[in-house]
Length: 271
Image (cartoon, rainbow, N blue to C red; front, side):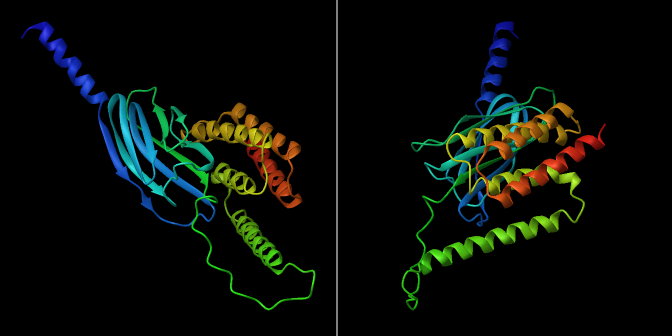
């Protein structure tokens, strides 16, 4: 067979592989309150992009073997213009990059680049605030008027908020009564995400996002069986700045300080 013809066939095959795309619809599980979340897990051997729009996503091959879907689970469809959007890589040996944040009706796009030969599973999360897109609350039933000068609606909302926060802290205390070291980094991420609902506006959010970036690097290495002391120190330093330099409620500051002490304990045990 003519060598030029073989070369042309090879090029066409490579082009066809790189052009492959696989669409999937999310499993909507509900929950999340005023925070939306999607978890996406795929298998990559080369490079791929995930494009997320609403409750649908396209997994597109950029290089190497065709990627595969494993999981696409959301609390709700991704809004076209989500507030406080955030991306977090969870697992995978290569690079995960948010190349386009959603907005203006456009999708979110995440690129996955695997540097080694062979398949690798990649997991990432996206988060957003749904406060501006949630359906309106049902009308509040009328209540008997109280003494003059008291705002009962405000008091009721404040009591409900306090109950929600108390529940979170009770669940956290229960978590740390068990074997917490194996999943400490995920717990730290949950605490940071929880506290971010009540603080971190404007410049403060930069320090929070930096901490999430450092935590992503640490979790990726840890999930691959590698302990990187420098990466752990980077997380500790970034979290220390969050606790020191941001406006936090005393209870939230104490919680993050507790996380910091546990991170230091894990670091010191691995000497």
